[in-house]
Image 1: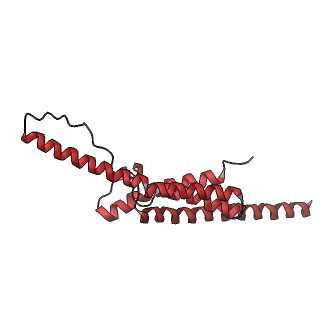
Image 2: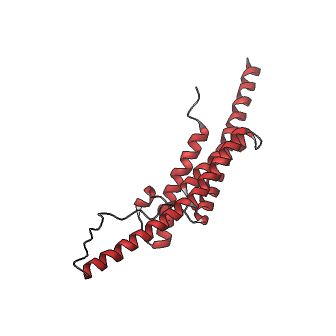
Image 3: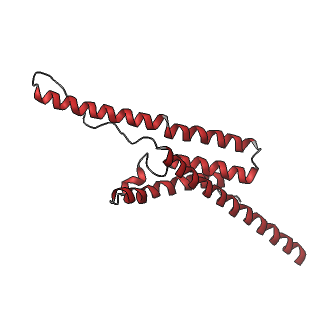
Amino acid sequence: MRSMNRGMVTALSAIALAQGLKIVTHKKVSGVWDWRQAFTTGGMPSSHSAGVSALASYVAANKGTRHTETALATVFGVIVMYDAQGIRRHTGEIAQLVNDLEDNISKFSGEFPSFEYVQREKELKELLGHQPIEVLGGAALGVVMGLLAAKFENDGRKERRQLNRHRVNWE
């Protein structure tokens, strides 16, 4: 019986490891341990990039670079990484501007009582995307994990074939 899809396990493991590494990188930058970093978007390394890179490199190592599955995983990965450092990062920057604007309006309304303004209960989430270096860090982590997973799987196949050959010879 076969276990869960190794490519999926590899990609999800890369995502989990990248999320865990965010705790360590946050500590290095801020000097504070913050376990909540494991559940945030943004930060170093990009878990999105780690996941898609792990999947693409795993598929490439097993199927070859000319296979359609490799092309699909690679194109999907490029789109995700572009989105992580492009559109999502810019959305986060816009959210930061809106939050700053709201803070300024709140201060202004305090100085002018006739200006009625009701501040929202919570600010927009600002840390949505990644800097290019964070995407690159996640991609590097993912490639290493994908290649290691493929190597372990291929080594296991060779070992099973050798055991089967020996079993046939003993019988």
